[in-house]
Length: 203
Image 1 (spheres, one colour):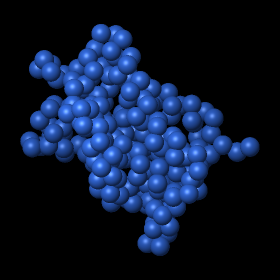
Image 2 (cartoon, helix red, strand yellow):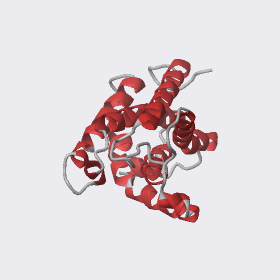
Image 3 (spheres, helix red, strand yellow):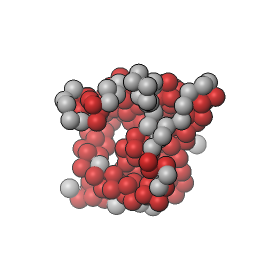
């Protein structure tokens, strides 16, 4: 328990705040711009007209997801890396993370079910982000702060800049496909540069 708390409170991570805060929103915004250039529509959300609500909502998500991340990245990721590469551990945790959320796509009452959101796209997002979180966590010496931030941003993006549109009754997930492609490219580049074994670049 002390070790988990130490990781959670390790907030002095320097420049690692930049990828933690910017990578996911950057990929989503770029995906929307590309989709718009291809003739797609930009999302229409009330939060875009009340931007002062975005930070409080982010803080709420930041607190709510901590319970999950103590399990995913605080325990499971560290344990898996003892017997496998960092890349493999990140992929396994990403798959488990996606399957964990599967019931929300199958049970009436959840937004994922009601809006017929594609679980496949969601799963790819989580798996790619899981690899990137593994890179950030290992690069910061085990800090859980990047995981907390990225997890909260996934929830926030779904409220502010959703990657799907069903305005016409037909689901359009083009922007989501583009965003996943960008996230996969980021994960591949990180793996190539840092190395699949540890995802930590050694000088």
